[in-house]
Image (cartoon, rainbow, N blue to C red; front, side):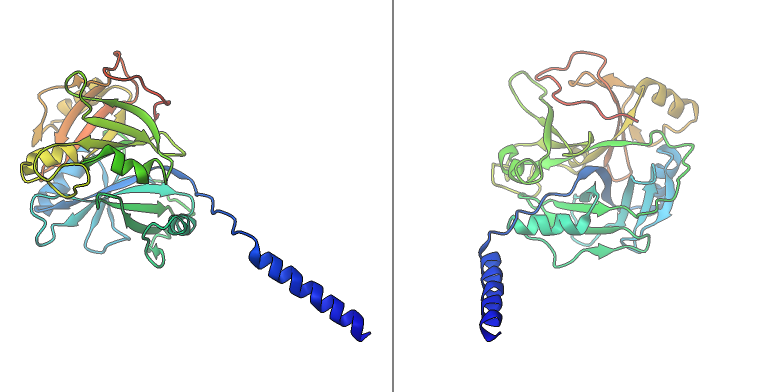
Length: 317
């Protein structure tokens, strides 16, 4: 009897030891489905409120992430977060970009397993959302949000568009940023182009599990060499607002422009009229009181794009 017990104990010990020696199974990356929001600063909350409510037509909501902030929602899952301008912000008006994921905690652990610096735990909002924030290779804050399990329907009848299809921000080095967005997270090429032949100014890459995209707004000048970070000394607040922007999708930018025009909503700073961009899509630019660009853009190109073909399906409403 004693002999049988010792054999059984030995087998258990061997099994535990063998299991401990097996290599850990790599963590799978949870889905990153599309844009959650863009968080921006305001130096004039009243003017910014009028802009996002009366011109963009978004619905004003409390901010479950920051009691000092406000959300301007386009849909149940996408919004612009507006935060008070912090001391020392200078000309910077972008706090972070944010992406929706189906499992924030699993994504936090996934990034940590790849030796990326992550917080010790996720944060939880009063609405049931979960999120965490990291920095990309150039120091830009990126947030990953798991929306509430039970989303409340949102009626926004006056909003000029319900879908934020891309977010852009200043980038110094495409190769450096790709180590995070493409190599680690799995963002996929969509389109690239530039103002002049042979030059690349914009690089668009879609979310791994959706069709919303991020746009590298490549820049040059003092402090913007590859490997650099921060805002180059040569850039003005107005120029930075062009680079750090969001885009709202439209079936027809021309029709959206007419809605704004007929409703006397074209106040503040904006382009004279819609135009066709280098990517062959109609677009119209408006600017919030601090210069952050809101770009209305057609979901689909109506002319042949310059520079490169589209390599993935377009987002839709």
